[in-house]
Image (cartoon, rainbow, N blue to C red; front, side):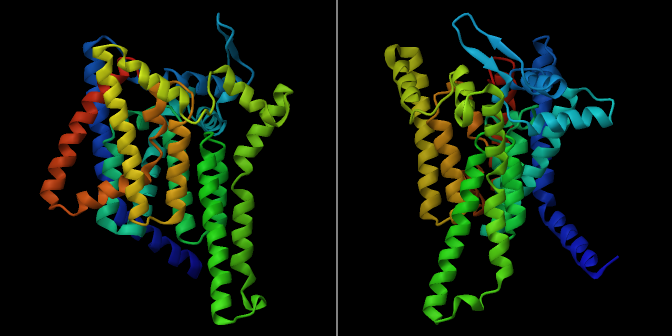
Length: 396
């Protein structure tokens, strides 16, 4: 074993040891959620595992894994639902699991999501610990686990995989590992359209780094050639790598459909997905106030959007690192300003974990026993809601 390997192994072991409380707590919360789902589903004569692996997007992903792209459904109203709308990384991994094991494609999706959710929890911890310390890191992970739509983290969906790639890419940016950041951003771009948020974070951080270096040179009078070329080259390569995943898939879809670089937008239009600045969502909320029962839901939506906006403002006031602000801002904007199915919006906000950091800081300031009681109560409520939600209409 080389000296480098000997140094890296203890470093990874120490990182895992520091993250262990967060990961164990996360696993406990997810186990509680799955238990609640199993009991609720059994009471309704439904199969919990089927709800996790063979519903909505999970069915589309497993079909891509098994049969590839080219499948579409034409609806009576003329809409065309094409599986080209689903980015390829999760189906690729599902196919890999199915090829090297006796598991089905749906089973592979579940395995990938479970492992990816743990990787996402670790990545969230790493980011939060780096910025605010270990205690805040643990609280941030547990808050992400107890979100009302947290059950999605255990489904054969792409949210967990994307969040894992995004969190570790952001951590790589914060620690100056530009090639790693760019590679993970590339993979995030192959996972979901919102991979653009990770690309934007990498680019914003890299440009800000260039600006700081130039400002420091001017202040000290140093000559530009005196700078070490290695870090600069790695930063540029990271920037070049970051958009290749999303751009590559979008261009491939355009070629496949014969509609050029914007062909992917036509595919999304077939699903009634688009970006209208939030007009359709605002109209949807406004329509809730036409009758009294639905008006309560409208109030809830307004409160929810207001809470998200308030959390982002607090993130800015607390001066979170630029890549976290850019990432969370783009994820939030794409989620709230898209004209897609409105019931999906809580799920689409799931990767925006930096919004939880102000709450994590407040929770970390409490006594351990009090914070544990708060998180425990919210975990139970989240588990019950997740079981109810998944046995009902959600998640689309």
